[in-house]
Structures are given as structure tokens and as C-alpha cells.
Image 1: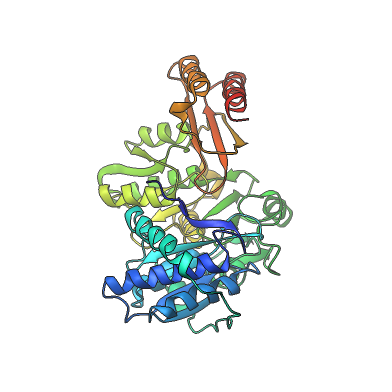
Image 2 (image 1 turned 90 degrees about the vertical axis):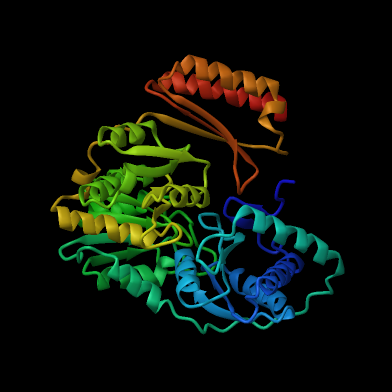
Length: 446
């Protein structure tokens, strides 16, 4: 049976309502604690961190209360990045790690991401087992009472030092604008990039619990681009709410997305002899232009389902050191077990220094095929194979593209959306194909 709570990036929803209501969150804590006890890990604590949403402390307290009922202790890292939780979990002997965040979503939403003691996100089968336990627990769970807010006992120092150690070059002479998205990176990123040697101009770094991702961060690049151009900075880096990804802006104002970063990093790793098998892993959403640009370098690009979790699984299978998503989740497996926006930004700027080139120069060589993305809110998830009109429209689009482009239709893993992506050489053609598919979806799903 398909999972009902866990999506491609943990559990996500509106804070305070199912599945993030107090009872379900407490039941998750109990189910996770029971799972750890079964695996003989109950004597070790669970690390819990969060982003800056106002709902984070209450969710952390509810989760800790559930864990406590199974005899599992909680240690609290306060506001920290998702990759920070993964790193500390892996290196400091925790039974598991939990990050409370809804990533790029607005403040009303929140989410729960669970990491195994290895620092990797839980495999699908373990998430499924925990879900079944949650549904067994919920009917028997007593009323939730007011819980004490957790006190921070864990610092991110070791994690931040690890990022500095990973850099091949200091960022001396680099002026960078950091858009912290009023999220997890707000206090961490400016101090980190300054410690790396950069001159830092920080914006959107004053979180108030409700302004996370609000017209700022990785999904809203207008502010960071304007500040780069205004200040003559070499680059801009914009993080999402939990800083597990970033998008960048070159000195010219040009957008540097995850695809471009994969090209820059892949080219440099290959040059330095650190790309075994000449493989880079990305997802079905990456632009056809990236696949062709890597191919010209003799690098094979492998595609997975959307989600950095699935990218990482393929990287491990193929022993690939680099993978990521167009949206800015970039995984350097030598240094991290998940996407890390701060590591990515530091690495790209260090490449500018070591190569003696601007970000504009490093980003050259990628011809981006026009790509159109339409998101259609749907009342229910019906398998595409059971929607004959939609299936016919997709097949017709594939025929029309005649090998010169791609059509991808998929349900979002985190929202009630059906996503339609059409990519090809001609803008008018991809718009026509997308319109036909969207019309078919609305006709069959409303």
C-alpha cells in the first residue's frame, strides 16, 4: 500500500492540522522510539532541529514527548539547517535525527524529516513501517497536555567547521550577497561565509517566525539579483527555508540554477580526477541542455524520480560523487549525505577562486532548452493510466516533440498538484503541447 503520511521529503502539511496535529506528531515520536528500541538504538538520543517557523518549538516538544514515552531521550539543536542535523546525527553518535521544516513552503506549513543514524533519510520501507505504527497508536493515544518547550543543548559548531574544511580555496577577494530567506541560514550563513574569507552582504536574515520564504530566498531571486547588481558583488546565493538547497546569481545578474551548478561542479571534479565513472546524477526535471553539455565532456547524466532522496540512492548505487536537482539540491557525497545549500554556495565560489574565473565564466557552456512547467491543483490523485484523455494528450505531445524534447507529467510528492513539464527547442510548440495536456487534466479531474 502506498504511504499516506510520508512524501518525497518527509511529512508535510499545515501546522496544527493533520498530519501535523499534536496527536499525530506525538504518535510519530512513539513510533520512531519503538522502531529505535527494536533496532537496539534506544539507549542513544535523537537529535531534533528546526527552521524559524513559529510552529517549530511546539512540534519539537510534541515529538520529544512521544519519544520519551518509549524511553528515548531527545537533544535539541534549535534553529539549524537540515544538512546540519544530518551531519551531527551521523558524526556525533545519535540514534536518529529529525528536522522540523517545510523547506520552501510558507510559514503556515511545516514538516518533519527523519534521518537514520547514518545521516541518510529513512528508506521507503522503514517510513512505511513507522506509518503503520502511527495509525495503530493514534486511536489509543490519550489527550495531549501542554508540553514544555525544549531548550537548546546542541551547537552547530562541528558541522560548520566541516564545511570550512571541505573548501579547496579560501574565498579571499569574493564579495557575495546572501539571501537567507529568513530561515535556517539567517545567522549561520553570514558568519560561515565570512569565516571562509568572503565579504558578505546579508539580506532577509531577520526571521520573525512568519516571514520565512516570504518574497525572499531560493524561490524569489529578485531581491538577491537586485542587490548583486546594486553592490557590484561577484555573486549572490539564495537559500530556501532549511538551507538544504541554494540558487545563485552571477555578477551580471544571470541566474545560476541547480543544473548550471551541476555542470560547473561536474566539469571541475572531472578535471581534478574526482569523478569516477564520469557520472553525474540528476532528476527527470533537469534540462535537456545539461544532459547535452555533460555529454560533450564525456560525462553521463543519469536521471531519477524527483527528490534528492532518490538522487542520493542512485549516487550510492553508482558510486557517483555528485548529484542534484534543478531546484538547487546539490549533493557532494564526499562531504554530505543530503543536499546542502551552504556547502554548495561555498564550493562554487571556491571554484571561482581556484579557477581564476568569474561565476559568469564558469556558467558558460550550458544551452538551456525552453522548459514550461504548469502546476494544476487536483482534488484527488488518480493514476495517470486511469485517465485516458490525459494519457492520449501526453502521447500526442511525445509524438509532436519527435525526439527533440520531453514531456513529463507527475504528481507532486508534497502538495496536491499535478505537474506538467514540457521541454523542447521551440517555445510555441511546448506551449501548445502543455495547453493540450492541461486541458485534458481539467476535463477529467476538474
